Image (cartoon, rainbow, N blue to C red):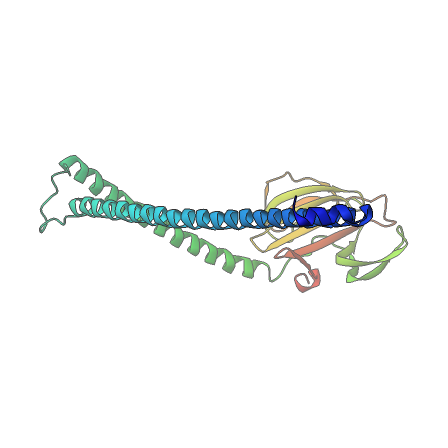
Length: 273
């Protein structure tokens, strides 16, 4: 035995046990420090390996992308060269008026016929447009002359024209966009100007209405009629188009006469005496 063991035997039990306990703790601490060192070493090695792998894959991806880009550029250049060769073969100009070997006599005749027919069609269209313009001019001249003076459609007194009035049936103030010509029931109503019957309307307030179109701009409307005319009939100026009917909504028999110019109501007093 060593001297140290002899000394430990001579010491009291509590003191020797405390020394052994401290010795065990020191050994355990050394072991723990060694384990932490190993862990840190493993982590460091793993980190270095991970960075190395990432750098490797990054470098290889760059190389692959560069190679694929170079391959695409080469393919595009080859396609362009091939297309250029095709275009050159197709677009070779002919010398002078020499016909192409691919063009036949029948093809030339067809194209000549098509060009002549196109020219004829263009000429026909131009003639039609000129005729249409002439017709429109004559229509405008006739319409402006005809619509200066309209005849009075019925003999009677004009009591209300292009003015506000109090409607006794509806008990409200309304604007009369035409002219009310009072006359006895059964009085003949005449067309103020020549034209064509475009509409025959059944109106709850104003009875049967006859609409006559005189030209592209003007129409006249006649209300409270027992009509004699038919839809689409051509009418001359002064022709009887019906007789005055008594409306159940009005206390007196009257003709409501309207003038429409370019789709808007205008005062009839501008056109009738």
